[in-house]
Image 1 (cartoon, rainbow, N blue to C red):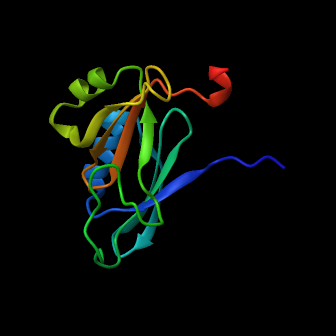
Image 2: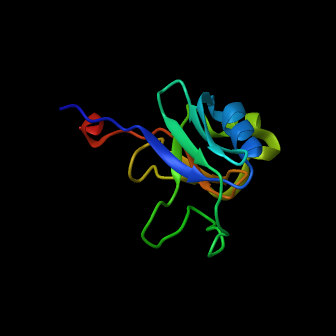
Image 3: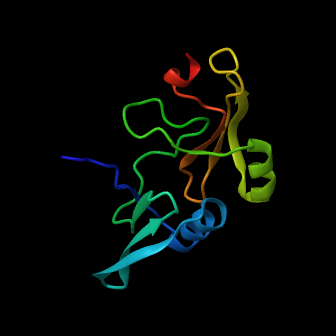
Length: 140
């Protein structure tokens, strides 16, 4: 039986800012909206590569501060990543929305041409933007 990735679920304080950021910079659009009652919505955002965010409204306050740099180093989700052809061009395109938390760092000693930068989205989630990654089989 085939299994494929479906979505990453996130809980956000400001759906409008989150949605606008990912629509503008990563091509996401609404795929479905489900009413949860009391003016609350569950929203599925999808990009052209069939990657979905399932976006929930918050039901409680965050118990700890958001992580910085490349994300938290304790067990759990560290960051999400997008690949681009040119990090500098993407950051220039993003303008002031590109809030850098770490990098850009070069990993040429591992993979020639591999470079990464980490940013915050409007909710404080860490995003990695990377260029030049290659699977190990591609290197042999």
